[in-house]
Length: 268
Image (cartoon, rainbow, N blue to C red; front, side):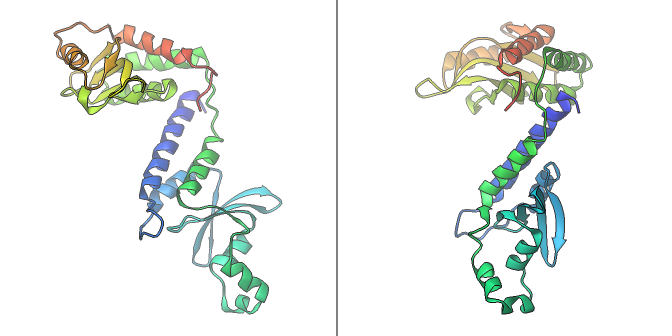
């Protein structure tokens, strides 16, 4: 699988994890986990689904038939150093199995095998899924992304432009701009953010893409959220009253340079 495909899969894993995490309620509160999101996340992980009785289990073998087992329910318990049979007994016992005192002790207390619950379980699955991906990259990988972005921009293929920009956001570690920087029709705006300015975020630069007009522009100047001068500069560039610091080819060359500044070369 190519670096690009691995990176797209990482973005999907992170997005599905976020969706599932947001569906987990607070302790003591009734809630329903987004099981579809969890299933999609698990499909990108090394866990294998196995149905036992009324349970939907996901098993990751670690050693000799034992390993990690997730029970897909609203609590999302994740067990470790155990077997599918053991978890089935504890979570869905039959009457004949409850005759044994040893089994009853297991059924009443799972602390000996419980690893995580809820959000912690989801973060663990996310990490297991990411471990499958090779996110190392070379300069040629980044150059290829830039070439694809330029081709998409030249063809006014906004979906493809956005996809390539999303990949650069992931590689560089950018953040979306705050609402104070919002400009009509520029739905995708991101940049390199520092959180060192009292009272607001400081962006070292901002990329802005207008999907409707297919305009891609760079503001290469320190910008402070809530600062009128910064906001006027962004609006002026967006509306064509002020020349951007780069567009098209020059902007993608800038993104390539920023991506290759990262140590690694890999993505965490």
